[in-house]
Length: 114
Image (cartoon, rainbow, N blue to C red; front, side, top):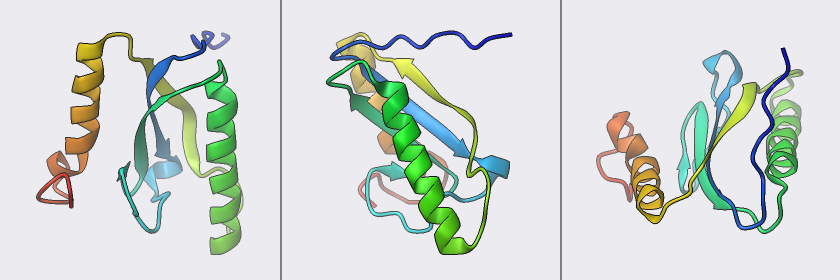
């Protein structure tokens, strides 16, 4: 069974997430945004209809770098990344709130700014 095509168009806003393979950590150091131990969340807007190419680059380059740094081979991410098209202003605010509060709700930090 083939995968459904992703909706990609100029100016599209997405909530993107991808989980580490075998639920293993994918980010050793967290610098900013919602980069969690074994997954990340991005809310991003594309300038061109190229989300899949962008995510292939982000996940691919990070995987290669991580594998070199830790002497590993193979997959870092579990399956295909997920992307939900954000098509209304109200949903944009809600998804941004969800991403900001994700580490708090997971018990990783006390406040979103932490």
